[in-house]
Image 1 (spheres, rainbow, N blue to C red):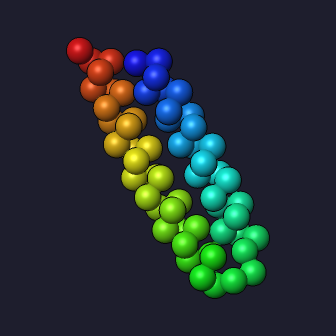
Image 2 (cartoon, rainbow, N blue to C red; image 1 turned 180 degrees about the vertical axis):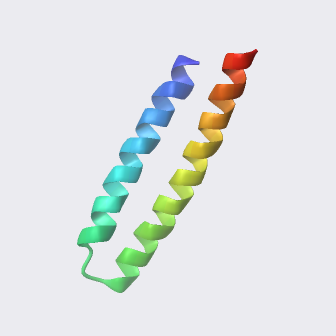
Length: 58
């Protein structure tokens, strides 16, 4: 469980960093790619949160 919580924290940090990069990017291409990365990381975080929740119930 500890490893999943640590990875969730890492994902959240990465989401924040990618949002900063997206918001400061001067190129539309960079903004778009960082937006896609943010969206992907958010999906992963949601799935990991669900797995953590499920593991807590067992």
